[in-house]
Length: 148
Image 1 (spheres, helix red, strand yellow):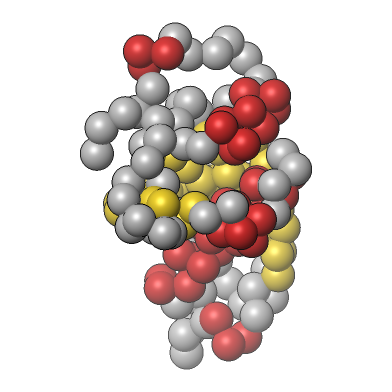
Image 2 (cartoon, rainbow, N blue to C red; image 1 turned 180 degrees about the vertical axis):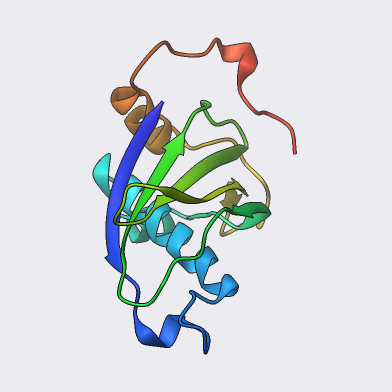
């Protein structure tokens, strides 16, 4: 498993008239979590794209437990719990300043060759970093998410 934590403060423009974070802004918070997770293992997101790989989102699931509010500092916990194949799955938890979990979510992205526009397996340069930073037992090769 790979786990990263990123904090951010809720900006006024991200909220609705009740000062709750507008539900559509959570997707951007999760994108920040993914980008920071990649950075934490040594691969800035733009370098993945420079290597010819795009990562479009194919699934997005979210459960709102409590609202995030204007000016709160949020902790975004981002996890990779499965070794990727052609897909990479992220799980997220957002905690408020009181350390209460307020949101849980998951996204699935797939690896797309930017030249051929074809789905590919996780490229070696990224797989090597994932395996190098993996905490806990490695999954067997046959458990990789190979199909879409």
